[in-house]
Amino acid sequence: MMLELQMIKKTIISGEVLFVGAGPGDPELITLKGLKALQQAELVVYAGSLVNPALLDECRDDCALHDSAPLNLDQVLELLITGGRAGKKVVRLHTGDPALYGAIQEQMEALDAAGIDYRVIPGVTATFAAAASLKQELTLPGVSQTLVLTRLAGRTPVPDAEALHNIARVGGTICLYLSVGMMNKLVTGLLAGGVFTPRTPVAVVYRASWPDEKIVEGTLADIADLVADAGITRQALILVGEVLKARTQGVPEKSKLYDPDFAHGYRDKKC
Ligand code: SAH
Image (cartoon, rainbow, N blue to C red; front, side, top):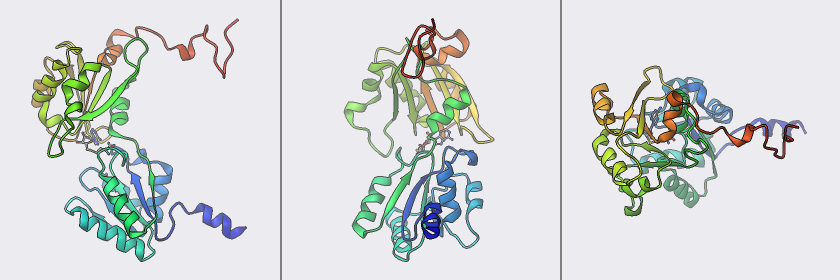
């Protein structure tokens, strides 16, 4: 029984690789499970370009730390597989949530081939950190009930059907990763969808949740210039859509969830 309890307490098991979402930057925005995995790990391979180094202070003194920024996929896999085979507790620390632009599928495939167990611990993605910094809900009744997470093509191409002018035909709320260096192209693509207009509001959040976070807000007409003036060329999230008007113009329609005349499974209608 004692042994069983001790086993349960271990977040990470020897010989296992845990893909952990580090969150957007603020070290307190990692999950409790992710933090415990870091504290127990014997080998950590972290994405140094965006993971806050303060998180690595949580690691044991004898934990081997490797920044994956200068490494290629084979070198990263070599570390994960050798660590796993040696029975080490291995953490692969990714920025935000590992499932978004994290290139984890190919790492998991290689671990499958090598017969090494792994799990994924989610994290707070940049979109939600940016929304929190703005104090902005992304889904508002009567305005938008759809959130699209996307990007412009960079070195990684985007399938034709998902080109921004096609995505923008839906309207809704659009959050763009990896694209702040291409603001003119982004604005052109969004307008070409025929739903957004030069008056559509846009917010750009640079390094959301970091001490040097910057917020730039404007419309599709002026956001490219505002971002250039602010000198933002990377590490920013772009949010687009009518929801962004709510902070200045109010909420057009209150949510049904807390409507006194609306009963649901957890609350009766007001009598
Ligand atoms: N897996 C990450 C995304 C990695 S791609 C996640 O879930 O957030 C890297 C891109 O994410 C950056 O170019 C930027 O667009 C965005 N990003 C990551 N951290 C950010 C932050 N703190 N603030 C704003 N954008 C961020």
